[in-house]
Image 1 (cartoon, helix red, strand yellow):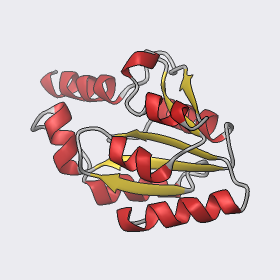
Image 2: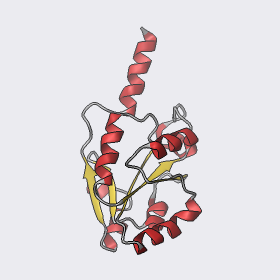
Image 3: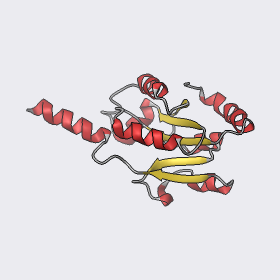
Length: 157
């Protein structure tokens, strides 16, 4: 379900009251590929509910450059929402998800294994109340950047 940022704190409180373990991850999820699917399946295994913080289009442009995102935020949110492991999608416009992480207060904060613990935004906050930080290995060679580069390369030929 795609939820509004204003609803997320109350929703998470309700989930916690039901005894659910909340897993949170975030990203641009611009062109969904098998690496994303693997990552989301593994993230969901850590708890009962997977919440994905999705960068807005403006946020993606600030992070990735003016040529991104390829897909608009409504489409990216709809695709994520349709994936079995994903329970909730919430958009955030900031450059980092720290404020959203503070609203969600997840039991598990998850990022890809390319992130070192010291570089995971929100890790200190999540661990401050007993939450855990986890990293998930990527599927070799699967990335949105690789897909875009292959597309550009085939256009040139």
